Figure 1 (cartoon, helix red, strand yellow):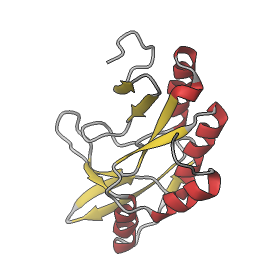
Figure 2 (spheres, helix red, strand yellow; figure 1 turned 90 degrees about the horizontal axis):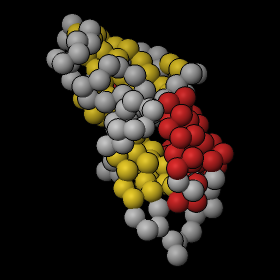
Figure 3 (spheres, rainbow, N blue to C red; figure 1 turned 135 degrees about the vertical axis):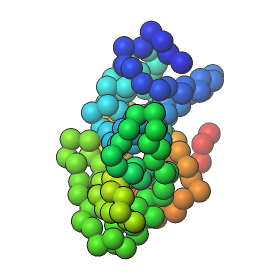
Amino acid sequence: MCRSNPIHSIWYWKINLFSTHLYHEWGYTYGPPMAVAPIPSVRRVLEYAVTEIPPEKISMGIPNYGYDWPLPFVRGETAAVSIGNQEAVAIAAANNTVIQYDEVSQAPFFEYEAQGISHIVWFEDARSILAKFQLVKEFGFPRVDYWQLMRPFRQNWLLLCTEFSLSNPA
């Protein structure tokens, strides 16, 4: 935990001789409903990170999941369920709800009701992943890492191949 960091949040840094992997999560199981990795918050972390670590040694973590929160949210009681991005779209379709896009956080979300309980879902889609890829390019990071590879998200892989030149690590 980086206690001296001016950014108050949960950090996991894996540091070795070759690179630093930055993983960060704002929207999380027991936190209030919000994007998992809102772009303004991610940017603040990256701006700080490059003051301490050379960009060529940083690998940015990208979430491959979302969360479904029951509402109303009560701190210390409400727990979100982690879901895949494809699952989020299926939930929206099954509940005939419109997926919205928050331009500030650069993330999709929607609300629905099931069994008398209101829910809000934040997840990743091609637009939110592209916004994260743009940060990777802007900061000059050589690679990305993913959280939760076991959930299908074909759009991500197609976008990754479109936006970057993929090669075997040296």
